[in-house]
Length: 292
Ligand code: C2E
Ligand code: MG
Ligand code: MG
Ligand code: MG
Image 1 (cartoon, rainbow, N blue to C red):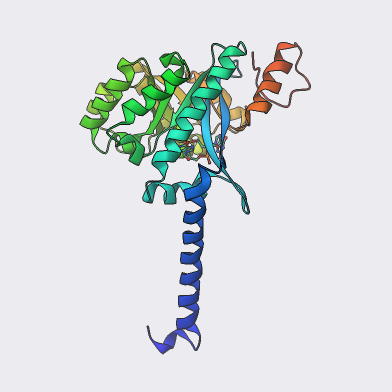
Image 2 (image 1 turned 90 degrees about the horizontal axis):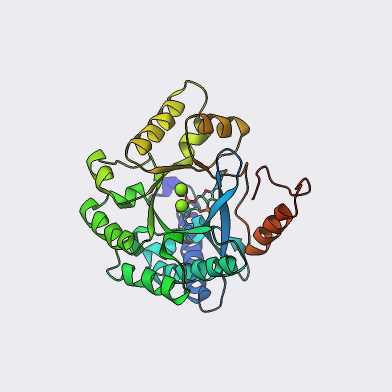
């Protein structure tokens, strides 16, 4: 540190670093209590049969209702949760809560709905992962095929042999596996073929940049063709426009997820949507898709 940084350069740098460190420590302190204080929430985003419904199932997306900061999205706390391994107890809560909610929906008559839960690298590498998942489905009497585990391509390909081993154990129980954010990692096609997954999710970065004939649209159509050749279902995430919806449907993408169709919602909103849709003409439902 030299004085050329300006009269207050050095102290300013120190102060800002401290402020950031203090903030992270505060956040960590709060995060440790989040599970036991009941501050975690799950929002659910529907996945629709292309082009516009009905609903096939939901992806559970974690939120933290922070007592002072309000509702936080994963990008505000997941990196810290992963670094400190707090994601392990949080992830157990997520699995359990998603299974509890799914059971409730099934009992309410939506017995065809499925739920997908995201797992981060730290969770995926836990030796007792299979036991944790088994406990959750048994506790809530979930038919295993109604639960999907989403793991990103990057995490899946980190140690492909061990991923194959873990996914084999899960799929032997009947649970489904999905490769999330596909296209951003470095998949070996040889391993992809061996992965006991049943679904590929096209990363929303490609969907976002697609326009007729450009590189991203070529990549998307190649991913769809690849998935089909490997017998995998394809989900497009981040569908925001009617053009994307039409293009993806035309390429044979079976399932669409994105703000165009519906946002992640709390369970009360989901029940409202479904109930209104069952009543018939759903002109008063603010959604671009048919729910039933
Ligand atoms: P993801 O699994 O790829 O989830 C999709 C993300 O895209 C979600 O962000 C969702 O809200 C957002 N999204 C959906 N449709 C659209 C759209 O049309 N446009 C745009 N711009 N975004 C859309 P979210 O909820 O902030 O989650 C971010 C990431 O955090 C997830 O990415 C997932 O990797 C991770 N995550 C979420 N919940 C959990 C969890 O319970 N456990 C773990 N380990 N990770 C989670
Ligand atoms: Mg996901
Ligand atoms: Mg994704
Ligand atoms: Mg993502």
